[in-house]
Amino acid sequence: MTAAGTLPSEKDIWRWLEDVPDPEIPVVSVVDLGIVRDVAVDKGGAVVTVTPTYSGCPATAVIAMEIETALRKKGLDPVRLETRLSPAWTTDWISDEGRSKLKEYGIAPPVQGTSCAGAMKQANATVACPRCGSENTEEISRFGSTPCKASWRCRDCLEPFDHFKSF
Image (cartoon, rainbow, N blue to C red):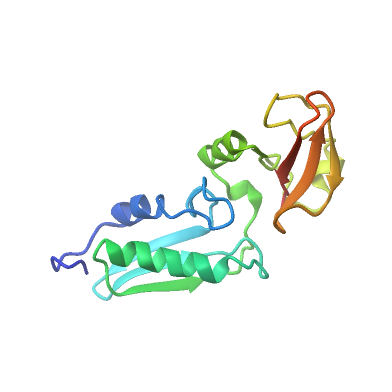
């Protein structure tokens, strides 16, 4: 319940969660990333179901804390978080708005529909440079600034950039 003793709607909670940034990529919210799977409201408060991007993600605990903090600041208490591991999170769950925000931030978003292992190579998918839009790009290192990103370079504008890996 909120401080006023009323329950917010699920729609309200979803809207509030849109303001909770991912701690590793703060331009996208936990809703943009698709890790918030469900929101439920009952007499006991709110239940937010989250699927981590992967089981070893170092930001998982911080995300849970930020979700709880944001909802409590809106007067919602109690807040309960549940973790759902199945189905596993996939980059296909990133919203179109989230993909646009990644690109504007300088991170090439994952190629839609290539979440299965090896699907990018099978589909001959290309990664467009988020700066100039060229598809004349190459992977420099499979390991980037965070575990979910790889380092790439544009052969046309010569700028390095992160690419959000497909999972």
